Image 1 (tube, rainbow, N blue to C red):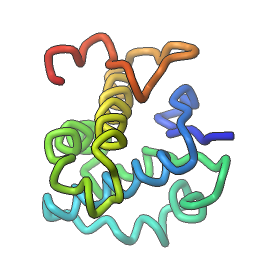
Image 2 (cartoon, helix red, strand yellow):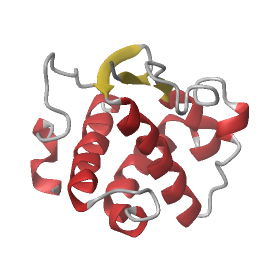
Image 3 (cartoon, helix red, strand yellow):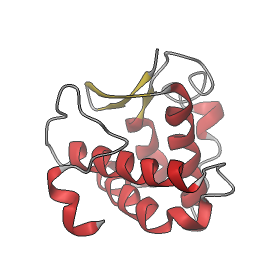
Image 4 (cartoon, rainbow, N blue to C red):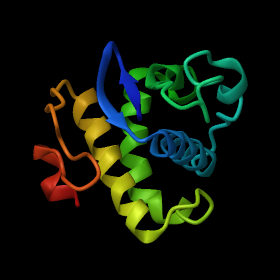
Length: 136
């Protein structure tokens, strides 16, 4: 089935249910490393709380704005997550292959937050967005 990572009003970034949940775990784990306490998002933010672990229910990335400093804070955080992914890989239950896929997904989310459209039928786990080639 899958679920979207909802960015603004866009539902274009569809991923597996487990990858959606792991995406949240990575954002939270890296936020903790960066000194942000975002654990409350799983209880207080309606676009995340109640969607975690629920098949077909997407997460609303906008819900992280309050915890990470607004739109720009979340956008920066996606880049930080890619840089620090190896540090949280094991605690988030990511194999090396899954970590590589997560790096791609984080890049696609950042690409979309930068105002770029998500291509229909894209392979978010195996391809890089056009502007991410130099940051792999």
